[in-house]
Length: 119
Image: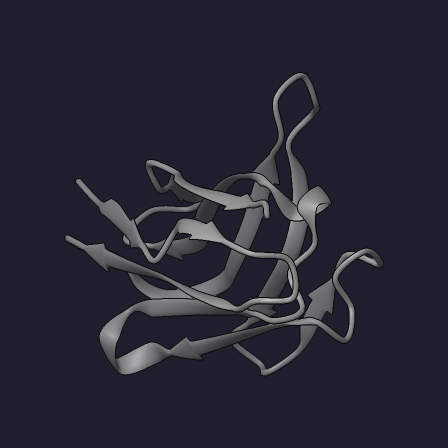
């Protein structure tokens, strides 16, 4: 079994920064996509950022220019550097890994980490 463990959430003032991390343990290889999602109270979960094994990245329009996703493949870790945080960024953030090894269609979610942006 594979587990994703997240860290880095917390309380930050508007305009501040946080760096989230997510590390996989267990048998997972050649991770095609590492991504971050978030879910605010009463809202649907939405994609924040994703990074493919080929080096491509994708961001939600609401975070472009403020957030940066990066991968450390040797450590099976993904990061989300969040700058210029806004109150509307407040949400539970979940990491997500997608792979075809050791099985096709393997998808794993982190437990979530709460980010609160408030003065």
